[in-house]
Amino acid sequence: MAIRSLDEAAVLDALASPKRLAILRTLAQQPMNYTELMKSVGMTKQRDAGKFSYHLKKLLSTDLVRVNEKTKLYELSKRGHAALALISDMRKNLEALDMLIVRRTELTVEPFDKNKIVNVLINEAGVPPRLANRVASLAEEKLLDLNVEYLSAPLIREIVNSILIDMGLERYRHKLIRVGMPLYDVSRLLNDSVKRRDPYGLIVSTSQAVIREFILFDVLPRNVSDAHITGNIHLDNIGSWPYGEYAKSYSYHDEVINSIVDESLYIDAETGIEIELKNRRELEKLSRTVQQLDKIDMLKKKLVSLIIEYDPVLIRHIHEKTANARVSIVAYADSDLNNDENMIDELVQNIGQRISLSLAGVKFFASGYSINDGHPISGVAAINLPRLAISSEGDENKLWSSLRNCFENIAQAFIKKYEMLRELRGREAGGYFVVSGCGVGEALRILDNKSEKPNIEVLKELVRRMEREARRAGRDKVSIVIGSVCSYDAARRMYRIDSSEFGHKRLSELVSGRYEHYTTSVYELFKEMSQREVLDALAEMLQFFTGGFLVGVSGRREAWARLIPALFQCVEERKGRVMIQPA
Image 1 (spheres, rainbow, N blue to C red):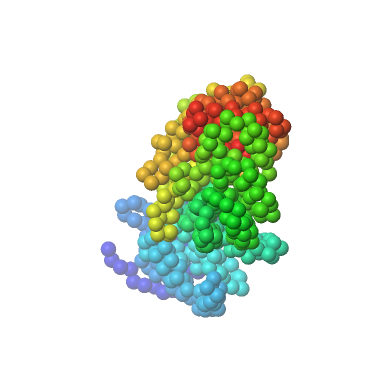
Image 2: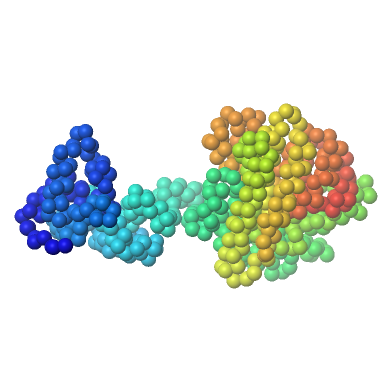
């Protein structure tokens, strides 16, 4: 093919039209057929056929555009690419591009440089060099058109991402997501911290906000992130996942306060202190330790629990000595206690305020999860049971399939968390993970809307399936157990998401308008049931709650006195893990 000699006047004449420049810039992105090209520059066959044909012939005659012999599509020629590059350089000179200033987050100010966009696209997103240059050129044009006083790195990244979306290059855009917080949110957190005089809270909130986005957008598989964001599951404390464990217990000794303070940043929800006191002197020392811990800012937003063997005199003394501290007391009692009526009466008098009781010698955290072999709880998650019930539309197979999918997503998330804990903490993460059902009562109302009372048979099947899926989803080093309570944050967030999707009226009726969150505890189902019904149900289900079952007791103490001995017997027979806590 002969190369046509250059006629500068003809080329300049061909470039002297906004429409023809638009055609060139459109073809610089991708080849097109006649109809596509006409539409892309805002022209129609009915109104502009003659004009478009005239413009296209001008570009073809000057060899700025050519027709690909194989595809029969119009494409930009080498001469066309060169012409656009010259126009870009001319525009830079005419508009004094060196005055376009970029303010960077590293507190530097520098002239805009398109090549930096190219380098980011290649190095961070893996974009091929030629495509990176094309995207950067389009970004440069858009930035010039903004007519702003200065640019910022986040603004440039937003423009580049929008171009990638327009070009259908989502896989590259995903790698360029910027994690951080809006200025308004930072300002609000700063003002709240000033009011509370809580600098630690500001540090934690801002850092965890960034980590949370990083985990959701870059660490977790897309299906897992989507399951959390859409409210099918809830992963607690994502913002501290690389380093934080949900709860951990320590054996009490002289240096325990140093260990707790050193590791407090790494504990999300609760620090337990397992105590064996032998004399009054040790009680005084414990009291001083608790008072010291109570003054530490890092522990103010977390539970601190004292875990002791049941002794009514000792409990009374500890309660008195720690009356002004924000600590909970969890006493564990052996079955021998059940044979002494006087001890039961004393026990009933002691339960309340900050005191909880676990049965059959099993140790518990105050948050309602049992302490398994002294290991920390590495992570906690919840499954949105009402959403699963609504989405299944009465199809049991669909319900159980969705439940299994939730456990698979949670297991994938826990594996990632385990790996991050191991890498960042520099040791084997020897804990376990707890999964609970959120909104059990609401789910049962959906699944069996004919019954006024909770259908215990449906509940048994649901709990049995959850325990089976937990065992199936567990992996090497990732042990998953079932708990009976979920966090309030999970219950509130899931309710709000479902209210938006399924309608506020429907969700409000589901919770009887009493609150705007799902129920957090399985035991809340039993409030309207007789003691016999409760015990029968627990006898068949306790074995599945290997993460512990929390009984929230309220009402008259006479009822407690009847319930506690019966629970002791039930737990002994079924080898269950139960803690009684004031509701």
